[in-house]
Length: 482
Image 1 (cartoon, rainbow, N blue to C red):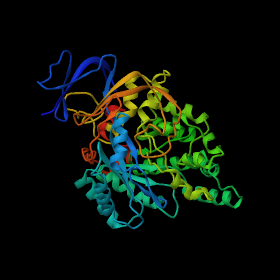
Image 2 (cartoon, rainbow, N blue to C red):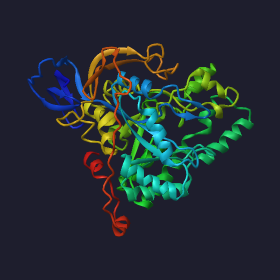
Image 3 (cartoon, helix red, strand yellow):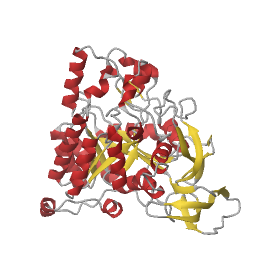
Image 4 (spheres, helix red, strand yellow):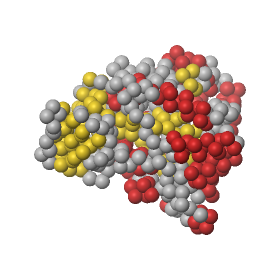
């Protein structure tokens, strides 16, 4: 059985750090302590001067996504391999049924695509329409397939947008099943109207994209989703929070005792909306994603939320489209496929901008890149911690290593990097997934199909009508850790 001994590093968890060795046998961590001995033939990693941390969990990716008339460039192998190069050992991707498509049919399609994954993976499943078959399929997904989260796009009118009726039905069903709803918070009606006005005014380039999705559009949807979750008595996870107004809405809700959780994208922490004014169409279009990059003033609110604990996780929304695909919208910005990369760069960008700046401690870094996602989606302590019994998903982090981020050196199959030219200090020296070394000082050893599907158990459903009226319930694993 394979054995890896990581010797002499500083083990960092969400609640503490200490000098210790880490012994992995098979796909599990079996011991954390001083002066450990590995079996004969063990692979020994010298972690002197390095941090030993739980592998990153990216709770928001879109590998191989069919979207806006094309398909994302990174499939489940290339995307997860790129993640391993950056220290991310697990992803939670999205099954997105077409309107009227049975949820189980879409889920089986995505499971088939994901069999080539190089790292562990799981799924959120989007609810894009509603009838009794959706109600039934949600039950099968939770009880038989280990899905405990459902996504609702409040944007993309005439495609996958979930209206209030769908959300009320789905949120209620999620509560019955012990699942947590998630939302993409943008008012789709407003976005559609603003898009049409801009096109009518002759503003059709990428510069129109942020104008069609101002912060108020996101804030209204976030507050509406919070209100629906409060009325239904269910926790809520809001993806890619990008502006002060949404961050403040989450903080206010949490101050009132609501179980609302917020996710921030690495890109929104360091990239601003000036990228859309680039005269080169390809460069400007490469940054088109939703919500868009914002005025730099919003970045302070996002960092403050991560520091204070009112925002909880960091992700990437990794969805790579190449220049030839982005060119589909050269004369109409609404046809530019929405999506950017980042699964490979997330950990380094957040370490450099967060830990090196003094905004975050190493333990807080672990919290927002791994442990909180594991807790919120009920896979802690299997993942998100360096401890005996946990999965051997580990990153050995060299805080002094530097790299200039660039599309020319990335492992992702995208042909653009939103962090192009940014030099970061702090990089993975080794990434271990399921006890196997997948990345070693620049050498990517990711294996197609090595990744495992991760079942996520539902949360407690022992509620009754009086409790729902009088209490706001939260998954126990989440409450313990957040």
